[in-house]
Length: 329
Image (cartoon, rainbow, N blue to C red; front, side, top):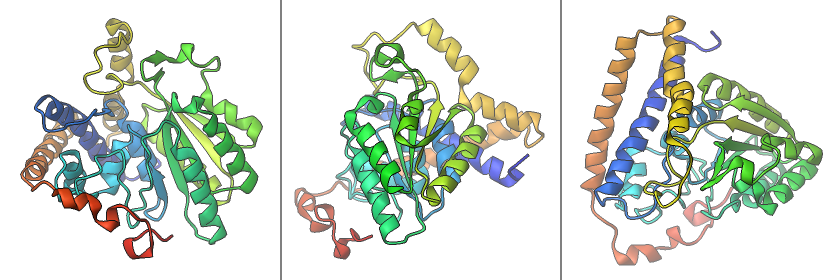
């Protein structure tokens, strides 16, 4: 095995927390504690943990609306949940939800909530890091739908031209919101579009956390040598685009159930750990239960935290990016 037992178990715990997060946050939507659309990362635990595990703490991550599995590992759990519940203890003061969270010290950057809007910012930021001779890489994650935005190709082209230290990760789950892959692109291997622009690409099983991590280690090493590149993870979206999106007819539920049964990243990784003698089923069950128990305790504490005041929305550290408020590179 490439990674030591302790690291393999740590990755499993991180995946467990991602799975518990997706389940519990969906429940909180139905209870009225989350007042905005929740884009559940259910089924994409392997991509998030694989990405985060390959990055240095000094590398930058640019999330999209389904990047919670990475953000969970960057932000403190309590701080992250407070922002979901609009509570003061949040990393964004309870004013950002997860769409607009930014933390200079934690190297989580500028999500815009605009489809494809992160690409030019991430590319320019990576170029800026290069000009300042920083040994830091920018990893920007997005879905297959965002890959159709014209700005995607502009960003790829400029990254290749200026050799920006950037890795673009495409979570290809086969659905751009409610539009299946075959109806919005002729080439199912989206990352291949970047090759003529001068970027290299990798296509990997996004339901295999080890495969994702290994691909990301290669990609980040290339980016650190100023070779921007694209990693495409082929994965399965186990739920709708956002929780409660039942107004769209997505696809045959039987077909989806079959895909989940074969490709569930939690099942695949548990089978890997057992087959390689890393852990027994009983131990893995115990770990999941402990993660769930700890998560619920932190979630209840976050729900009990005070809400921000109206005036808090006008505090300059939430509005301006400058050296005083941590906006300087």
